[in-house]
Image (cartoon, rainbow, N blue to C red; front, side, top):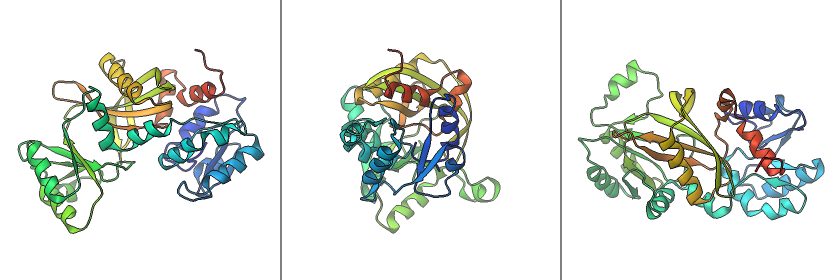
Amino acid sequence: MTGAGAPGAAGIIHCLKQDPSIILTVADADENAVGRYLADDFIQIPKADDESFIEKLLQVCKSKQVNVILPLVTKELIPFSKNIKAFESIGTTVIVSSAEPLKIANDKSECYSFLKKNGIEVPSFFVVRTVEEFIHAAASLGHPQLSFCFKPSVSNGSRGVRIVNHSFDESFHLFHEKPYNLHISYAHAVSILSSKPFPELLVSDYLPGCEYSVDCFAQNGRVRLVVPRLRKKIINGISVQGEFINDEPIINYCKQIVESIGLHGNIGLQVKMTKENKPLLLEINPRVHGTIVAALGAGVNLPLLAVRQALGLAKR
């Protein structure tokens, strides 16, 4: 398992260690990653953008006779996907989607465009590259009467995500609230975007309803399991309190998304409800959700299911 220092690493290690037959080696670029103290073995590896990343992982897998790799780091997914055959040649299966589905899922703007083109409903959105386009998108989405959101097309961990609210009181937020609020005033947003170049943004409708983390388990584009979880409390973009919900519209909507893109393995989606209580997509993480360990409370061990599937042990 890579990403041994990720926020959800401890929980995912706990999931995998439910099977005593698994010998678990964890890896991370940080030699002090918390996972090294929780698993059977630890290897320090280069970061995904290092040219030696794949070569190092192949050496590790060959020397340790690794059967399965479970990647936790978003930036590792494409390199792994492009080198699946190299790992297969030494007897190692990487739990990762194909490169083209990953490209769609990892780019929020491309993902929305793909789904809309394929008849799957998403929030109203604009792809923005300039301040002028941002101002136009805001007006088109109903600002100042209506709130809207923006986020970089390519990012993770809630980096760059903001909700623009005309009535947001930044002074009150500064002095009376903890610094976890994603809201920002329109003037402040325009000021920041005007100060220096910024990455391509997805600007979209703000969805006012409840938010859900949805863990999906897929086999080569065919969804086998969908587990929705109401996000009751969120800190720094991470759900720390939730409740499992058997909601057919959410389950069917997420299944449709994962199968249309053709994803594989553990897939995490975030959806939010419209004012009409309809689920719409916020984003996709085409890998294990950091809070996937919560599903153990519902009797489902999703990371272990993915490993068993990779070994050909999962029930058809």
